[in-house]
Length: 101
Ligand SMILES: [Cu+2]
Image (tube, rainbow, N blue to C red; front, side, top):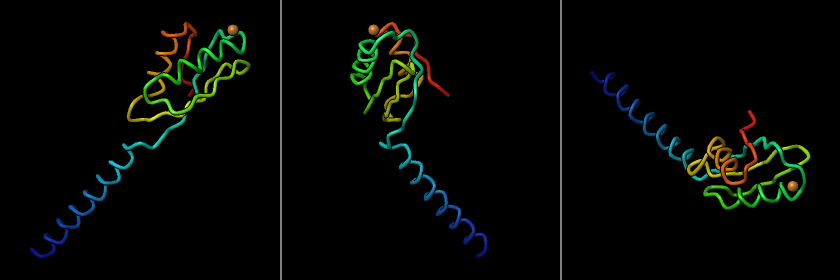
């Protein structure tokens, strides 16, 4: 009986420790992703995409490069994700965007 009680309280302890860790991960830790952005032909295209990205909710920083057809983005994972950002860029700027794996 005593062993069961000890095992149970140990389980409860481990579970609560795990849920605290999960909560910390779901917090505001910024993540980085790279989007592939097609059809940009000059630096002003890149500037358009960058401006649009920075206006989006959850985007912290955005660096868009026309020569490499890519955008490096730091974002708040609680507010957005790479797929949603790619979709929004395509819709708002007309440049086809997709997350780079
Ligand atoms: Cu251009």
